[in-house]
Image (tube, rainbow, N blue to C red; front, top):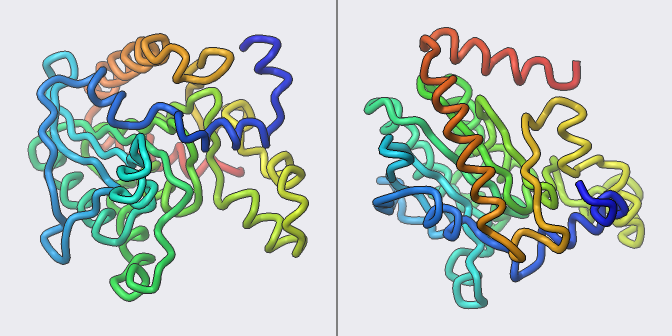
Length: 268
């Protein structure tokens, strides 16, 4: 980490994670995987474009990819609901995760959302139960699961795709149970204390790595990933290759038992 990056506050990191020009999931998928084929729909209600999901090849190995994708311009932001998934998005993730388990494909997730969509329709269609089902299914998935937090990882919307054997987090990303705005409003009833809230929440990659929640920090250029995407992609590629090889050697019971212990230890 550079001296300039060390000086950045937690709120600075929140602002960097939210920047409209920040590199999104589609760019990483294009750089890391060959032959990506997008799959659509939850086979129940419809398709959620906030989740870019499908099958591709990583160094010749078939993998399932589940990526929250905010889009790169205003129209894409609107089409993809700024990365805020509806229940059908989480059910699409469940469908493809179970498919991956059936065909013994590792699952790789990209987290980048301010949270699950809180609209009335989402609640009526079972938002909470869809997220809960993701947490349940991913905790016992019989294939390796890798998670990359690439931007803003907020609330249950992020947690649903973060039950993984390895969690990597980019240097200027954030990951927390809710937004700093929500924290300040709920705890202090004072929206003006949002920067203080960001510090108290300890939501930066450095904070979470120290606590053992995040396994690896992916370094970024001083002014953010968009300054040199290749620098970040090369780190992602090395980490994914290393850990897929290591996790692939484990027996199913060992894999799921270690995942269980990983999450049971958090906060102990």
